[in-house]
Image 1 (cartoon, rainbow, N blue to C red):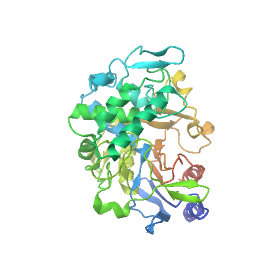
Image 2: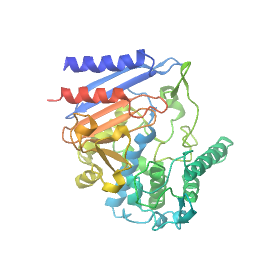
Image 3: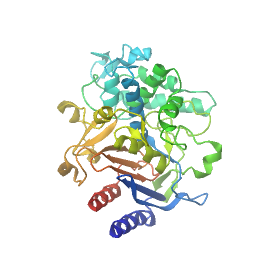
Image 4: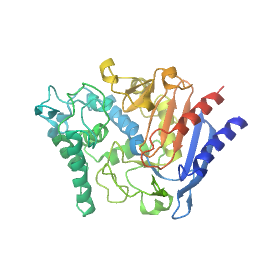
Amino acid sequence: MYQYQETMDRLIRQEVENGSVMGASALVLHRGRELYYNAFGVADRERGYAMKRDTIIRLYSMSKPVTAAAVMILAERGDLDLWDPVSKYLPCFAGQKVWDGEKGEIPAEREVTVYDLLNMTSGITYPDEATEPGRRMGALVERLVKAREKGERVDTQDYMRGIASVPLIFQPGDRWMYGFSADVLGGVVEAVCGMSFGAFLRRELFEPLEMPDTGFFVPAGKLERFAQIYEQTKEGLVPHTGAHLGEYYYEGVAFESGGAGLVSTLDDYAHFASMLVQGGTYKGKRILGTKTVDFMARNHLTERQRQSLDWDSVKGYGYGCLMRVLENGGAAGSNASCGEFGWDGWAGNYVTMDRKEDLVFLYFIQLCGAGTTPLVRKLRMATYGALE
């Protein structure tokens, strides 16, 4: 075990010392006990704030598993059906169009469903200069961000109406593609429960899971623990100040982004991950049913849909409920258990949840566009190699 800890320390320290990241931390829980924790470097160079266990980071797309859990809570209660059309809850999504390269906008063959959103098969895109819907989505986000910067209140439902106005990039269910699906799910949750998405998450997840530092903004009293995000330039790492998906993390936030808007800490997110690893329970409290967690940790893509799940970081994986699910360790180049599931974030933060091994693996950095880094694969390989 000493060798494992030494290996983890060495690999993370090297990443900081060679200037790849400003700061990094990792936490591994195995069978309910802490197998590894350490933090290196700084969370904010300009303020001289070291990376710590209670450092608050931007989760970006690691918000998505939380959103999936919220949807499944409502599904368990019969408050929504996964096959429901999104327009049942958000009427602005009725009568959507699909972009055809030759004909322009054509009618959708069917409506987008909640199930499509959970599996990223909706055809709803992210901003992307390569396609007409992507360009329109980029213009929409830019307009809404500028409105917010002018002091206008731009809330989740404003984003819903805007997203619904952009043509789908393909017919619903045709294939897999990453986009604003999780954000739309946040809007669905609001419509179903009659409260803000953030309020629902606090009541149903963050409070029972003891996650006091997780939410859609960082209170003024906690800003000293909020990490700076950096971007790599020719001059090295410099602070990043953009909002490429409309994210905003301060008091007064109105757009509660289910796809990228949450902040959290290592221990907070570990509580959420541990709940899923334990089949939906946390310290004796039932959050989700065991069979529901089974459903979440399973591939839901058809063979046709998974052909477009072609990122290098998900080789050997299926996808469902806004998370990757390992199906072929050989194709993935991984010694992890088949069935491990999780996701990563744009800034390089990463989670693995493994019910077979009762394992939670978390790695936190704040680097623009990092996604799944080569170091994560090394750390995971070392972690699984240390298990008995």
